[in-house]
Amino acid sequence: MLKRKLLQAMKESDDKHPISGIIQLDDVYWGSERRGGKRDTFVAAVSLKKERNPIKMWMTVVDGFKTKTIGKWAKRHLANGSAVISDELSRFRAVKEANCEYLSVITGGNLDLLEHLAFNWVSTIIGNVQNSLRSSCHTLGTKPLPNHLTE
Image 1 (cartoon, rainbow, N blue to C red):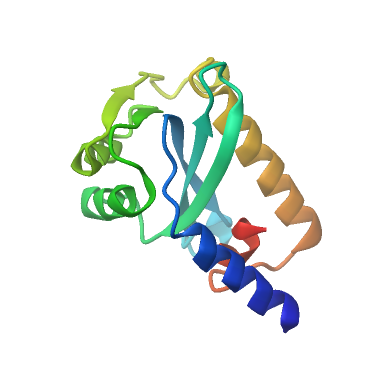
Image 2: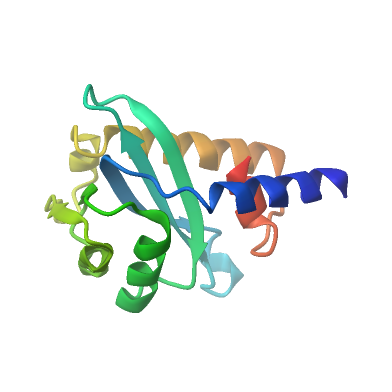
């Protein structure tokens, strides 16, 4: 109970500070299709220094990858003037609503291209977080997921 409250307080504090600079952005799914196809969706964003080292990571559960949802997320979590790089998911163009520059790298579904320099940190961090959550939270559902992503 105390841990949950602490995680919620950390999440609320982080929500007040948008990330800025060069940002790698990707879409992530949690869960399996065996649960009736209902997988949780979240956005992963990593802010980088000019030397391309990560400064801050942001993972937010969203209600699907709709243009309106991504635009609202971007206005809340991305600072004006940030440069956002993502794969070709068309809904990510909505980050322009937050006055961000946007560049998409066409992967064509080729997972090897996700090892591209434009995605190296966000892909690495997504993999690490998913493995950590799978090993420690075997039955993690939708409700506590945002707090665990804060951790």
